[in-house]
Image (cartoon, rainbow, N blue to C red; front, side):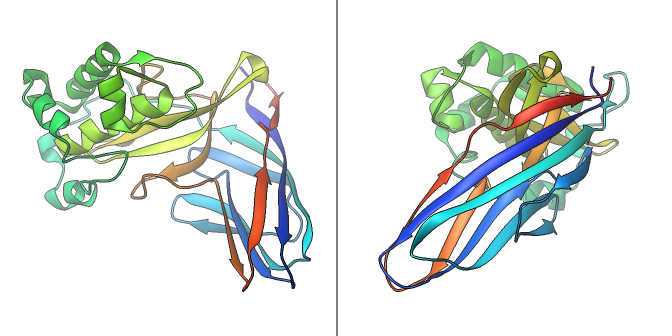
Length: 277
């Protein structure tokens, strides 16, 4: 298994304005130093890197012409830090999590609708009342895999309710349902997005997975789609962590201009090469 990955992004912002030279601000997420070591070989030109919470992002700002293309090329090396939390190590009980921490993660959102009727019915199941955190997680994943059929290349993110009603989805749906169930139980949980890299870097897949908080261990990786409990392997490359905002757009464009500004973000999957191993 490679020790890490060299990632080459070539992204463009194509723009057009009716008149004048507007001020534009572009923000796009970068690989954070969370569960991984990150080396920047080639930073995007005229961009500033910033760290906010667990996330890292680049910003570009300045005046632009009436028509053109902004190029954002970058080369990064990412070395994931493996971690394996074994089941025999006590994860603790759900009831041990403090009330203040539970409440912090129990705000309903579009993709994690804690107040949906369908989830009120799920909470009536005997398995949902399990207090042991590890066994509750096992039960939740078994329930999800029975209720949702995995479907590759799902273009639209359904959210937890629609996924259960349709009975299918991809890693986004598996993760959203799991996070919603965990938060209903009072277990702090969050969503990670990035890449799951297979076959020595030959196959690159955009991926979403989750984490839950153990009162004894801290944050534990739970990948509902791949059935991974407690293992952060070198296959996982993190781009961003979604904790209290249920959807962090990978890029954002803001302008200050009286006329209309039209833009298109042109992105393709990055070129990824294995390093070492």
